Structures are given as C-alpha cells and as structure tokens.
Image 1: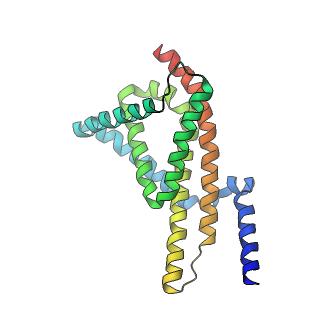
Image 2: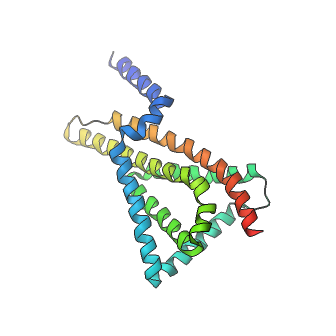
Image 3: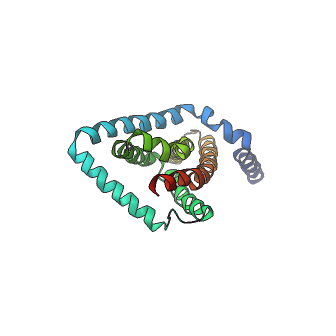
Length: 214
C-alpha cells in the first residue's frame, strides 16, 4: 500500500515537472532564489568591470581568461564559414554542459555565474559598448536568464538534498520533494531558453560577426 502511494506521488510530481505552464511559472514561484542569483550576476558584472578597468592584475587575468575562452571556442571547431546548423549544434552542446553542471554542483553554480559575469565584463571593457551590443545582446538577452535559471535550479536542488540529509540524520520532516520538483522545472526552463539562445547565436549573432570581421 505504501509503495503504491509513493508511486502515485512520484507520477503526480513528474506530471507537474513536465507541465509547460508550471515550468513557465517556476521563476515566480522561486523568485527569492532567482533574484538572489540575479543579484550575484549583476554585482559580479559591475565589480568585475571596475576591477578590470582600474587594476592591471585583473585586466591581465581577463586577457588570460579570454584567450582560454577563445581556445575553447576553437576546440568546438566553429568558424564563420560553417553552416548555421553545425554552429547551433556546437553551441547547444556547450550550453547543455554548462546547464547540467550548474544543476549538479548546486550552490557552487554561483561561481559559474560570477565567472561568466567576469568574461562579459572583460568583453565589454575590451571591445566597447557597440561591439558588446552587436555580438552579445542578440542571444545574451535570452542566454543570461537561462544561465541564471540553471544556477537557481542547482541551488534549489542543493536545498532539497540538504533537507533530505537532515531528515535522514535527525528524523525531521523538512520539505524535499517540493525543492526537487522546482529545481527540475527551472532546469527544463533553462534548457528551453538555452536552445532558443543557441539558435539566435548561430544565426543572427554569427551573421553580425561575419559582417563585422569580414
């Protein structure tokens, strides 16, 4: 009887997780976590820009990080002459890895958010506002929320796991299923947004890049 009840609870939970309306509502239901991660992103962006602009060490570090980022892009074997589908698939693969990584590492996904903020700050400082708008904003306006939602999903997943361990260790009844469900909804939303951002980056942004660098 208990096993049957648990199975029904699990089925209901899965139905809720894959319900598109529930997925779209997840940022509002978890607005405290999402706002906290957003604040980390914004503060990291602002602090990184100030440090890069005023402290030589951070500017030098930015050069190293950006060079490593360029090498990573080169390893993806993306060139301006490739067809859009190849570019989009390579971007999807990279973004999916980041998305899943954020979910698995939990609270430490905040470091991933801060690191991405640092890269964006360096690009803004190095190439200027105009290039930043043309080369980052077309897909970034969707990719940045996707990054924030994926990190938020990791934080919620982490809370759920901690509550589970507390329940096992101390026999308490802290909420677990709610946080796991909400973390999965935000994860799915971030994947959807990463897919859309990848299409935009592989088409519109790359067309802009071709014009700018041809």
